[in-house]
Image 1 (cartoon, rainbow, N blue to C red):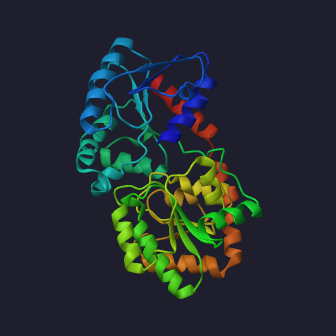
Image 2: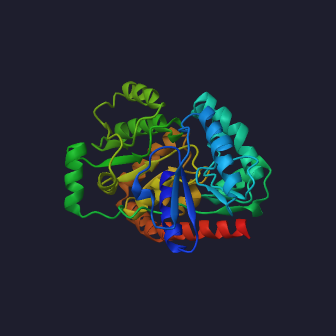
Image 3: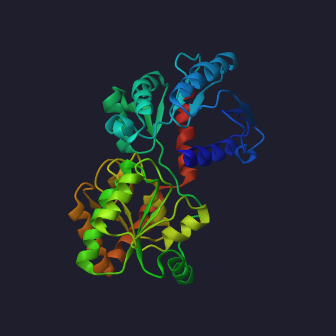
Length: 357
């Protein structure tokens, strides 16, 4: 969500110098977010990092300002609206995972989202979302006409690029003592399905007898204790590597040096690591549910994320069939052409124009 807001607003504000944009922050901000001189930044309190404070910020601070300023549109890149504000409003609702899997969020956060997001969707002038899957999901569950919802895909950050062999060898040396590895990119959040990935990797190790490792590249989340429990059960302590959160260029190195991306959540509104893997020429194993088949196209092996043996079999296929890896990489080169931040910004701006006219 952060990348979406940053990249689309950077393009939109620069491409529309005759439009005045007001950026609302809940704390001191970095000047790098003020992309051009047609932006006025404003700080409103309180800092909103808790459901009670979301309410205070959007329903009091932001609403008061909107009613005073009466802008042509309030664009909310993370989906929250100010109910009852006297202006048109366009939320970007990336997905509604909290409806399908409330147990994967903190209790109060899930309650807040499930109470307010249906109201935001109904009050919105238009809605933007990041996949056809999410569009249908929002329309069906919130009773919204699909014609009111615009699909704005995510793009690929420019620091992702294919690597030369020397960079790959150096990266493998640094993280896995020179061994090939599968990689998962993203926070260690419950819906990322990491325990099942580790179970499948354990079966793969036994069947293949290979020295491949599994790299988990991303920050810890509150599902991490289950991950460590499964590692201990499967005796894979030396074969699973945690990198923590990586700087942009380092993430490109770690992803671009991988044998394959194994990205198998049971719910995604989009799944940005899929297109990042395509950009770095890495083959993909991903889930056959929610948005992932739409985003991956034919550039991935699709598996049921709840079927550990199916995931293990896909890993074996990539190990045993070099021509399959090459084929997936080639298809990824075509599929990734559908996604860029320039396209995302153009589509979001189209949605803005529809909402304001």
